[in-house]
Length: 427
Image 1 (cartoon, one colour):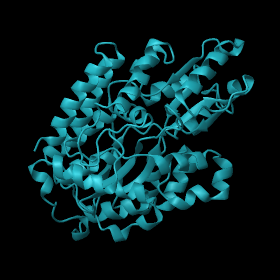
Image 2: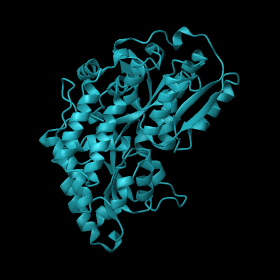
Image 3: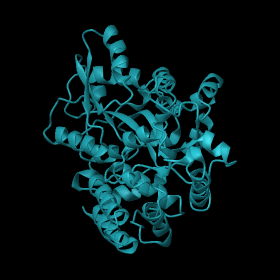
Image 4: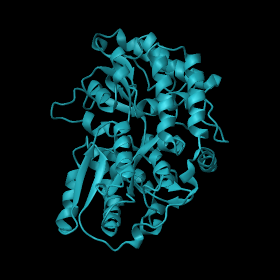
C-alpha cells in the first residue's frame, strides 16, 4: 500500500501498470438508467452496528425501493475477493459497493463499476484529497462515504503519571513505555500494537512505517522503491518491535478488532488505529476499561511525526446491477453531509466533509478532530495500481516474512522490490 503519490503520479502508475482493459473507459452509467426498485448495499462487516439503522430510515421513506444490507467479511482481503468474484461472474447480487478507495482504479479499469455523475454529489464540500480517491482517468467512479487516517491512541492516565507527552518519534514512544513499565499500574500493559496480521492492514502499517522514515513505496515515475535505506529503516522498526518486546508477540496476528479489544481491556499503552475506536473505547457499559483514560495523537515517525495511509470507504455502482436510478438516489442520501455528521456523532468515523472538522459543537464532543484533520492533511494515498491485488500481496508476503523472522530485512525488501515491480509493470 504505497504512499507519496501525487495526482500526477496516479496517472503515471496507471499508465505503467494497467492491464489491457485499463486503457478503456467504461461506457454508460447509472445516470442513463431509469430503472427503479429494490437494491442491495454490499459492505464489509458493520462493526459499528449502525448501518442497518441508516438503511431503515431510507426504507421507511422508499417502501418500493428498499435497500438490503449484504455484510461481507471483516477482513479487507476477503471483502475484495468477494467483490471481484461478484464482478467476474457478472452477478447483479451487489448494487452499491462500499469499496476501499484503493480498489476504485482496479474496478473502473476492469469495467466492473460505472462512472457516476459527479455534479449530483456535493464533492466541492469534501476534502479534495478524499474526492480524488474516487476518480479514474479524471472521471468520477465513486463518491466518498467516509475517510480515514491512522491515529495513535494512548493511555493518557499512564503518560501523566510519568510526566510524558504523546511521542513524536518511535524512540520517544519506546522511552515512555520503559518508564510506564516501572509503575505498578504498568504491570501487564504492553507497549504498542498496530495491524500486523498478513492482510491489507499490514500493507497499511508497512506503508506508514516506510513513509514515516522518509521513504516511498513508488517514485514519481510509478516505479517500486522499497529497496532504499529509508524503506529499510521502516521495515526494521517493525521487525525490531517484535525482537525487543516493543510489540507483544500476540500482535503478529492482530487485525483492527483484535487490537481494539486489547486496548479497551487495558493491555496496550499505545495503539495505531482508525478513529472509530474513539466511541467504542469510551463506552461506559463495562465493555471498556479505558473509558475516559486515553487520548489521541498523530502517529510517531523516525525523526518526527509520522504519516498515515489514507483509508476510508467509497460508494460505487456495480456495472451489472439492476435499478441503478435508485442506486444513485440512495448514494446521495448515504453519502450526504447530514449522514456523515450522524456517523461521526454515533461512531466517530472520519467524515469526508471539510466543514465538519471546524464545527464547534463537534469539536467539543470530539476533541481529537483537529488531530484527525492534521493526520488527514498529511496522509498519503496508496497508489491506484490496477493490479492492486498482486501489489498488496507482494508487500504483505515479504513484510510478514521479515516480521516473523523467516527472512532478513534486506532479503525481504529485495523480494518485495522484485514482486512489486512485476505487479506494476505487468500488462
